[in-house]
View 1 (tube, rainbow, N blue to C red):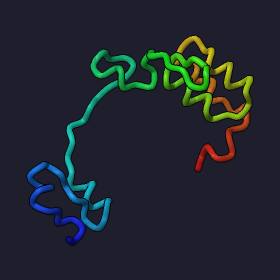
View 2: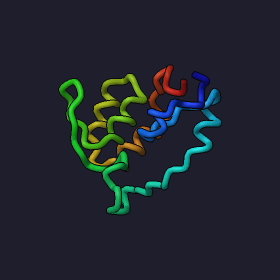
View 3: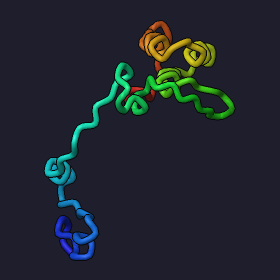
Length: 108
Protein backbone atom coordinates (compact mmCIF):
# COMPACT_ATOMS: atom_id res chain seq x y z
CA UNK A 1 0.00 0.00 0.00
CA UNK A 2 1.31 3.47 -0.86
CA UNK A 3 1.83 5.97 1.93
CA UNK A 4 -1.05 8.39 2.15
CA UNK A 5 -3.65 6.16 0.48
CA UNK A 6 -4.86 4.19 3.51
CA UNK A 7 -7.13 1.22 3.17
CA UNK A 8 -10.93 1.18 3.13
CA UNK A 9 -11.14 -0.23 6.66
CA UNK A 10 -8.94 2.60 7.99
CA UNK A 11 -11.01 5.18 6.11
CA UNK A 12 -14.28 3.78 7.49
CA UNK A 13 -12.90 3.89 11.02
CA UNK A 14 -11.93 7.53 10.55
CA UNK A 15 -8.20 6.80 10.38
CA UNK A 16 -6.06 8.83 8.04
CA UNK A 17 -2.83 7.39 6.70
CA UNK A 18 -0.25 10.15 6.40
CA UNK A 19 1.12 11.00 2.95
CA UNK A 20 4.83 10.79 2.31
CA UNK A 21 5.48 14.22 3.82
CA UNK A 22 4.32 14.69 7.44
CA UNK A 23 4.22 18.47 6.88
CA UNK A 24 1.92 18.08 3.91
CA UNK A 25 -0.29 15.74 5.92
CA UNK A 26 -0.46 18.11 8.90
CA UNK A 27 -1.23 21.10 6.68
CA UNK A 28 -4.41 19.41 5.41
CA UNK A 29 -5.90 18.80 8.85
CA UNK A 30 -8.02 21.48 10.40
CA UNK A 31 -8.74 21.36 14.11
CA UNK A 32 -10.78 23.86 16.10
CA UNK A 33 -8.70 26.07 18.37
CA UNK A 34 -8.83 25.37 22.07
CA UNK A 35 -8.36 28.67 23.82
CA UNK A 36 -7.11 28.74 27.39
CA UNK A 37 -5.16 30.88 29.80
CA UNK A 38 -4.62 31.12 33.51
CA UNK A 39 -6.89 34.21 33.48
CA UNK A 40 -9.92 32.47 31.98
CA UNK A 41 -12.03 29.73 33.55
CA UNK A 42 -12.70 28.01 30.21
CA UNK A 43 -10.16 25.23 29.72
CA UNK A 44 -8.03 26.72 32.49
CA UNK A 45 -6.90 23.21 33.44
CA UNK A 46 -4.78 23.12 30.25
CA UNK A 47 -2.53 25.94 31.46
CA UNK A 48 0.89 25.29 33.02
CA UNK A 49 -0.26 27.74 35.68
CA UNK A 50 -3.25 25.60 36.70
CA UNK A 51 -2.84 24.60 40.31
CA UNK A 52 -2.89 20.80 40.27
CA UNK A 53 -0.28 19.42 42.60
CA UNK A 54 1.63 16.29 41.64
CA UNK A 55 4.67 14.36 42.86
CA UNK A 56 7.77 13.25 41.00
CA UNK A 57 10.53 11.36 42.80
CA UNK A 58 8.96 12.17 46.15
CA UNK A 59 8.92 15.92 45.55
CA UNK A 60 5.59 17.77 45.47
CA UNK A 61 5.05 20.36 42.69
CA UNK A 62 2.28 22.98 42.84
CA UNK A 63 1.94 23.40 39.08
CA UNK A 64 3.44 22.13 35.85
CA UNK A 65 5.04 25.58 35.50
CA UNK A 66 6.98 25.08 38.74
CA UNK A 67 8.33 21.75 37.46
CA UNK A 68 9.07 23.08 33.95
CA UNK A 69 11.02 26.09 35.23
CA UNK A 70 13.00 24.07 37.79
CA UNK A 71 13.89 21.53 35.08
CA UNK A 72 15.95 24.17 33.27
CA UNK A 73 18.63 24.05 35.97
CA UNK A 74 20.92 21.48 37.58
CA UNK A 75 21.55 23.55 40.73
CA UNK A 76 19.52 21.68 43.35
CA UNK A 77 19.18 24.69 45.66
CA UNK A 78 17.83 26.86 42.85
CA UNK A 79 15.47 24.07 41.74
CA UNK A 80 14.14 23.94 45.29
CA UNK A 81 13.66 27.71 45.36
CA UNK A 82 11.58 27.46 42.19
CA UNK A 83 9.65 24.46 43.53
CA UNK A 84 8.75 26.38 46.68
CA UNK A 85 7.69 29.56 44.82
CA UNK A 86 4.31 30.76 46.09
CA UNK A 87 2.81 31.08 42.60
CA UNK A 88 3.37 29.81 39.08
CA UNK A 89 4.18 33.37 37.99
CA UNK A 90 6.90 33.60 40.63
CA UNK A 91 8.29 30.24 39.43
CA UNK A 92 8.28 31.55 35.85
CA UNK A 93 10.14 34.71 36.86
CA UNK A 94 12.75 32.67 38.73
CA UNK A 95 13.14 30.39 35.72
CA UNK A 96 13.73 33.40 33.47
CA UNK A 97 16.67 34.43 35.64
CA UNK A 98 20.04 34.00 34.03
CA UNK A 99 21.89 34.40 37.32
CA UNK A 100 22.04 30.58 37.29
CA UNK A 101 23.40 28.51 34.43
CA UNK A 102 20.88 26.68 32.25
CA UNK A 103 21.35 22.94 31.72
CA UNK A 104 23.71 22.39 28.79
CA UNK A 105 21.03 20.45 26.91
CA UNK A 106 18.13 22.83 27.62
CA UNK A 107 18.18 24.61 24.27
CA UNK A 108 18.58 21.38 22.24
